Length: 571
Image (cartoon, rainbow, N blue to C red; front, side):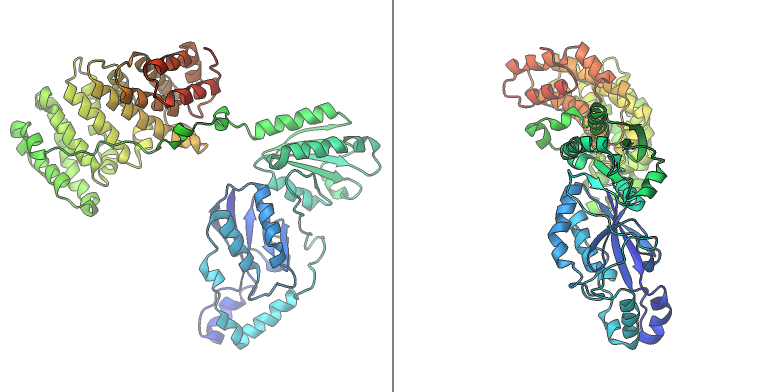
């Protein structure tokens, strides 16, 4: 939930206009603040109040709205906190200048997002109170809100505050503005309005069930009761002609409406709304201690070989100015200077790499690609390459993928180079988000996974695949869309499963494959193409079969749970 600070000027511009002349320094405003969450304004005005934005008309309109951050705290925790501090924010404790709304919002903000409100608000100069102007402001504003006097009751100018019932209780709205506020608070989940009246015996038959459903729902939704004999404006707004009448809302949009005593329909509808509003993934309830303890950061190949020996393998090409420059860049450029040196060094070297693919003997091309891998280790280098020289990376991958018998060293360092590209913060967009580079990367992985002759190639391919799976899974965990299209994920998953079935010797390679499969699966949509394919290939049995060959591999049982979470419950 977004947490915002509403900032008002209690002087209504007077401070900005007159402070310099009267005080000798600029005072932009006499600040009054409140916290805005999910369409409700939390304010301390002699007591903690929760109102619709703009309810306190005497404050005018906010002069500023500041985004403080996001909170994941559930509604019931927020209410518990407010209840725990309410004894410190009472009418008697209220002081317009020393213990006021800004004191409350600063503490409330720290609780919600881990930081207070801006210091220029909390540190409003105390010196202003010692001046004639400060005294004038104090008299003017104190007269507006006399300390100890109750706030006006509900009405057109200032609606009464919305009550704060505990989560799991039926909320009662006594007026249209209170109903609107409750509906606003439920915009991220669902709400049910039960229109009743004190002269409706059938309505009372449903009260116990409605209370039970509210307890069951807890903070997952809002169940509201409106007595039409008291809140006639709310009944008129929704054109209620009979009671009981129920109206449901899902994420702020009206869903359904019906009248009459139908306990079965009420119960079924509420249960359905809970599922639709909180369609939690089956994976979220799994206990996967090893999987969740796994680092979600990509892996890199950071070892730098003796560069003089490496460049010597290029023969006369090793003395090219582009090679000498990149050698110095890797060996000598300080980390702090690397980003600014990237353009002058990596631009010419990228063009040199492409030229070498056609001019250097294939058995030494690996030296050029390994130089590129080493350069990518430096800060800012991967960023520069993917932003400005992505064609070079694509040319290398295309060259390697096109070889019927690719030399072992070239394939290995190309896999390592491709892993180091993930040092760029733009990797998701520039590699996974670009079809050509993504396709070339996928082809490199799938062909290398099946290299039975070279254990190191299989391990490196599994590492690159894990990097891809990790980067692709991050937006999925954040509630966003995958970077890799489903067709490509299906191809990768099939390759992983085939490689798992073949792996008999390397526990390291198997672990990389199992982890990559886990991150491809985690939070994937049940019933999608990938889960359908893996079910058809009996992926669960393939994974379990590896347990006898690799009994100490702790990730196998947890990936099996992920498969089962997607509906694969076979043997």
